[in-house]
Amino acid sequence: MPNAFETALTARVDAMLDACTRCGKCFEACPITGAAGVAGADPQATIAGVLDIVRTGAGPEASRKWASACVLSGECIKVCDYGVNPRFLLNMARVAMARAKNEPRAQRKAGVEGFLHSIRDSEVDAEFIALAKQHNIWITPNLGGINRASLIRPTGTPAWFDDPLVRETVAPVMIKTRTEMYEKRRTAGAPAAGGAQVFDLANTKKLHAAGVRLVLGSDTAGDSNRWIGMMTLVELENMVAAGLTPAEVIVAATRDAAAVLRLDQLGTVAPGKSADFIVLDANPLDDIANVRKIAKVYLRGQEVDRAGLRARWQAQSNKATPTH
Image (tube, rainbow, N blue to C red; front, side):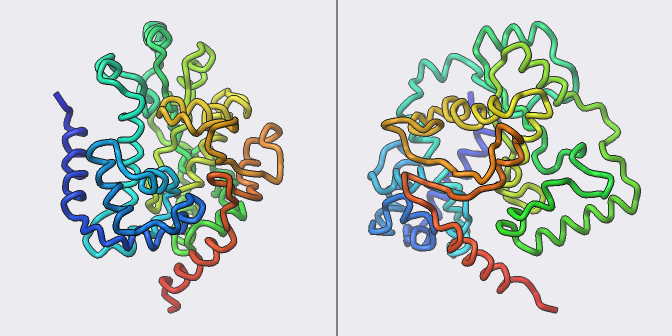
């Protein structure tokens, strides 16, 4: 029997499938169609194919490529006049493709495969660890990303907030709002951490030491409190603080994360796999914070025009930001 979350998710998907008019505007607005190799595809046919994938797990090649290439830019959402979230549908298409290919019913009936949040209200015991290892359970520690209180310095802000990548990828209005939040907390003398006992970091250390599978998950939502991109990049630092080495965290964020999602074309750079990778200006094995020093991004073997995307986003942001 489906639980309340599954029922609500199904209802949301069905509502969007019904509301979508297949006009193709979302495809036309997407900045990643070129890198995905589908720039010449018919917009209406491609989005129609995405809907088919969500329903059945199967659809046209162009639709499959587009769904797989989604980088969560959100440009598609802005152009839809019917209240549909195309980005959500693309993500659901990816889930449907993974299930259709790699998740036979027998596996789905086998039980829990993993946990999307760490245990925070108590310390994990030996029985939990034994069961997790016995069933090869995976866990995303989900240590708070950019919102982890222990990241705050005496100045009132975290180190990542000064990173040039923040100004390059986050809207000024969101930065301003967060700056005001930090200042308000600093002047109020708010403590660096909340009063409640939180066991997530201790449990992550304990689970890692015991050999339980840990994979990256950051609870990114794209709202004003959970910034797309920075949430995940900073979560890498949180996992290092929990006892993983930089190399282990990188594996947890790439190979192992792709494995638990059954995205067998992703996760490693190897023959026959999708050439999705980043080039950094500094070695993350020396300091995991170096993952934010991004020089180039490649999707499907093609370099992403980061400068062009940045200029486009910043222009739109400046247009939307009041000048008075």
